[in-house]
Length: 118
Picture 1: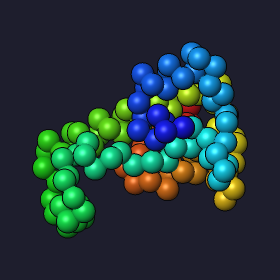
Picture 2: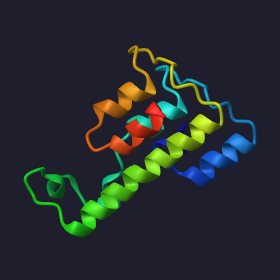
Picture 3: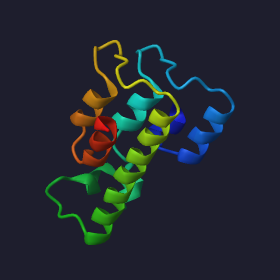
Picture 4: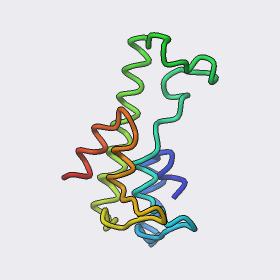
């Protein structure tokens, strides 16, 4: 599941090749698909070094915007990998949310939403 949190496709693929169950749920009922779909990209992907720099009013540089878009695309690719490996998008966590619900809750995750909607 942690590989999905980071959208690390190589590591996700390796785990799946070694029989990691794609629908395993953690103590909160979240699956790898939920982590991949509903976790925003790490701030380091977009050049933000600390929370002070992550102030929404600060205009985003073009390079940062491109990195953020690529990070969301990486998440969408991780979602597709999990779906093609048998991950069930209908599973609900302890809060009753699906992977699509988690993706919708994140702003900027349109590519992830599109991947889940098929």
